[in-house]
Length: 219
Picture 1 (cartoon, rainbow, N blue to C red):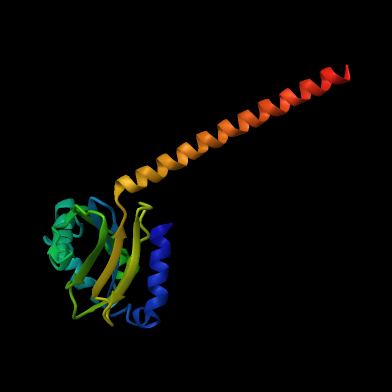
Picture 2 (spheres, rainbow, N blue to C red; picture 1 turned 90 degrees about the vertical axis):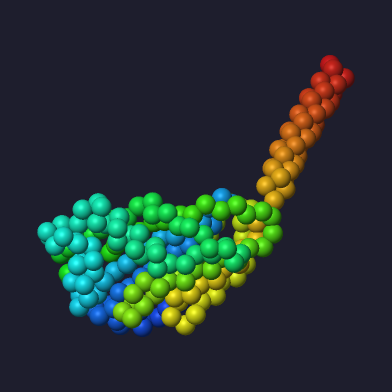
C-alpha cells in the first residue's frame, strides 16, 4: 500500500507530461526506502510501444524470443550501474535483489513493466542524513519519476525531498533517532502502564473495602 501511495503521489506531482510521452519514451518510476542498516531502491521501467523493440533486444541478448534469468539479471545490473546512490556524500554499492520481467508481447504493446529491486548496506547513527540518487539510465529516451517511501521505523523521519525538473536527480534529508532513546521511550511507556495498572488495582481494592465497611455498618 505504501508503494502504491508513493507511486500515485509521484504521478500526480509529475503531471500529464509523463503520460503524454509513454508511446515513444521509457518511463522509469523509482522509489527509495530508508532503514538504519540499508537503503533500498525499487525501479519500475515501462517502455513505450515505439521503443519496446530496443529494450527487448537488450533483454533477449541471444534473440531466442525468451528472456532467461541470466539475461534478466544482466539487464538489471546494467540499470544499477547507471544509478548513482550516495549517503552523506559516500557512494553506496547497490546489489540486485530481484527483477521481474513481463512477457515480450506485453512490452511490445506498451503495457509491460520491468520491476527491479536493489539494496545497499549502510550504517547510520542518530542525526540528520542526506541521500542522493542520480538516474543515468537511457536519459535520451526516458521520463523519470522518483519519491521516498514512508519509513517503517518510527525513529526515522523524512524532513525534505527535492528533485531536478526531469526528476533524474533526487535528494532526501532524514532524521534518525538514537535507538536507545526509542528503547527508553518504550520502557517508559511500559513502566507507565504498570504504574497505571497498579493504581487501578489499589483503587479497586479501596472501593471494595469501603463497600464491605458500609455493608457491615448497615448490618
